[in-house]
Length: 137
Image (cartoon, rainbow, N blue to C red):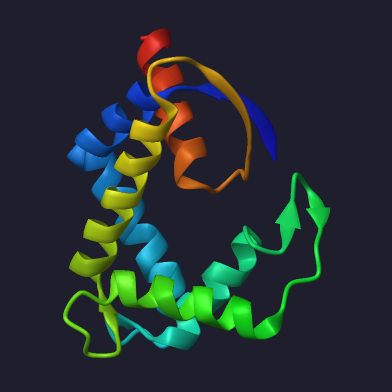
């Protein structure tokens, strides 16, 4: 993990760079698709949701959550990705929903820079790295 400074424009710029964004989406999708069938099952997506630990921590402190509540949240997230409701997420659905979520984050951040603790392999960390490379060029 590292502490990074970013704002909404960093995220928007990354999402709009189709080559960088699509490459990262493809790589993440491939890593999540453990059975290599070209789709993400609920079980494959659940591992990713759980690894994010968004709902199990509060400002970095572990919090005991109701397992039924967590299951409901994860079910709801999966439904957001599974646009055609066929029980699996294809690459295009994954890309569209990830893009929608990242742009919503960008909108929430606005134009004022904030410091955030980011996981090394996160989409936001990749956006910050891309922005830093542009500034160095």
